[in-house]
Length: 339
Ligand code: TYM
Image 1 (cartoon, rainbow, N blue to C red):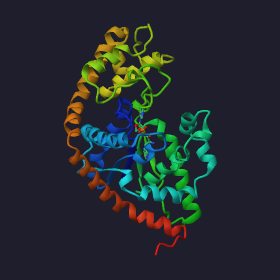
Image 2: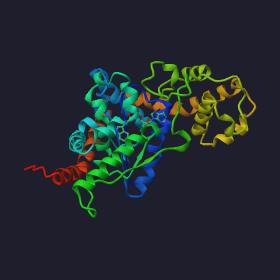
Image 3: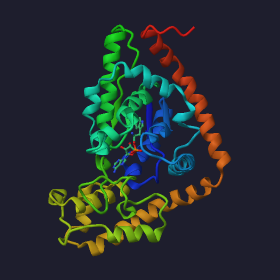
Image 4: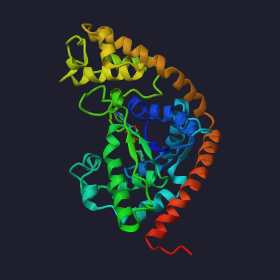
């Protein structure tokens, strides 16, 4: 097994990132190491320049996100933890795959449509070709599995399409250049929604900080955000079926279940018939209790810039080594002479 996944170092790590992806990264790093495989986790800083950004903030956020990942349990001795910008093969492979990716495929990406909105002409070329870089991120390492939240599923399907077309066009059936990666999406936390709007995903780019729980929020802030979360006036149902058509209630129950490791039915067996006046404080306490150790580790790690830089440098060294054979095979398959 070779696991690869990334996160953009823009803004804070929030509960959606944690339950949708990072918690799975942590769980998988031990299993993968025990099986003799490898896990590579990276800060997608090259992706972050597809939107307007402040260079000084990007640098700080990259270190901050590194601290957050280690605080969540990513162990740099077990996993390869690095930032894309230190591994130039990502950008190189993106260009090589750009000859294979089709405009029509990229035009269908929902994230492109959402982020570009009505102003496609005014967007950066990077925002449009972003999924090709994402394909390069995983194909470069022959990833077998990619743990992500549901919003990244379409990008992963594109990576498979690119790999398949490249193999068909430039490699023989018995010696493909790229492995087709499979997504791993946690069913119980595939899509954590905004606390203010049950139809929008919890996101770093939401202008309202009240819409998300950040892993760096203190206990009071977490309790406050949960208390103010949008709900409906009905009591909770006693099983999952009763959450149909109640997006906000379903989201809060889903968060509780994902965090406590129970099924939604088990949570509702306890809270069914109760109002949110009882459920919200219980959810807030569960979140505070679960996130407090992460928060404390984060504050400690964040202060040691040198240690964070060293983690990223060490990870990049290993990543560059693992990336080299696939990049060389790609150049060769395309007939490019490298001296
Ligand atoms: P990003 O930085 O938006 O999110 C990082 C991870 O968190 C998951 N996630 C969520 N899961 C459940 N509910 C939510 N509300 C939620 N919000 C975010 C995402 O699915 C993701 O797994 N393009 C990627 C980064 C990337 C990448 C890659 C991922 C770059 N290259 C290669 C995998 C493989 C992104 O912007 O994720």
